[in-house]
Length: 339
Ligand SMILES: Nc1ncnc2c1ncn2[C@@H]1O[C@H](COP(=O)(O)OP(=O)(O)O)[C@@H](O)[C@H]1O
Ligand SMILES: [Mg+2]
Image 1: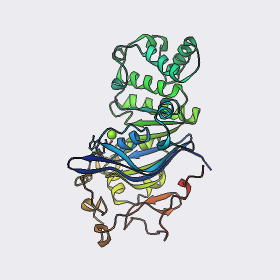
Image 2: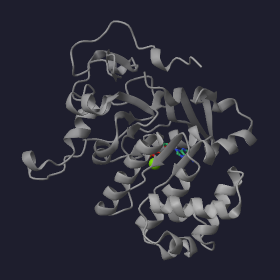
Image 3: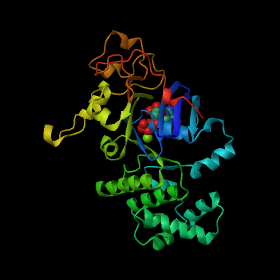
């Protein structure tokens, strides 16, 4: 059995605003396996970034993690002292964002920032750190890595900056990489190159990757498994083939239908109709109810839990599209923390 690098169980992160409680993340569970990519997909505002910030324990105020456990290689991150958590970030768990410009210091060379990061976590000499940095820049496919080391962030193109950030993230050999919209700002050619790099690196280093994106195309290219998020909850979870070929949640089906297909509809985009609900003062009902064309009488009173319809396929729907449902509600057997 593959071991999970990261397990998240029943995570809830709420924002306590003057207008009420915003349930940005509302009891979600998933795991990222070693050497595999879990895609977390959903429309803007559904809680993807707050999920990743929760894992890093960097939720901005007035947000607060109000429930759940997060295990990184058996260590419960939510119980670590702050100092130890800082060591985990960067060393054991790295993160790349949409816009690397904001994560680099604009007035320091790439090399200086790279070496500082390495030296903060590894007991090696400056020269060894320099060599390691150059090696990593070359590994992510940057030509002339020695030159890149001397350059400033603004002197690199967006794609090169993104690669440099991936190189820094991977230099410390993290067990888990969290990539939040890592290619959204890039053009398609560079996007494909970055995805290929991430694929090569997870194969080579066995890193588990949580790939967060609103783009199902990106998920299709890289993910082994996918979790579909909606209004702070996971609506469907399973292997990429299962979920893409036999979606069981009406929302997943609508999302998949919103992708233009050349063979079917001459490239026209059919966005999912309606709007996601406000996460402020969420009701105890299915959050997809107002947009659902299959809703039945249960949906306005019962918020469906993520339930296994096959051992590797779960759906949170009172009336899922596939017919066989196991009686028992999912207990996340394999998520149960054994270590
Ligand atoms: N600082 C904040 N104050 C109040 N609510 C917030 C704040 N940041 C995020 N949220 C809420 O969390 C939800 C999820 O945000 P986010 O995780 O950034 O979405 P996305 O899926 O686009 O990454 C937002 O829709 C918003 O309602
Ligand atoms: Mg986001």
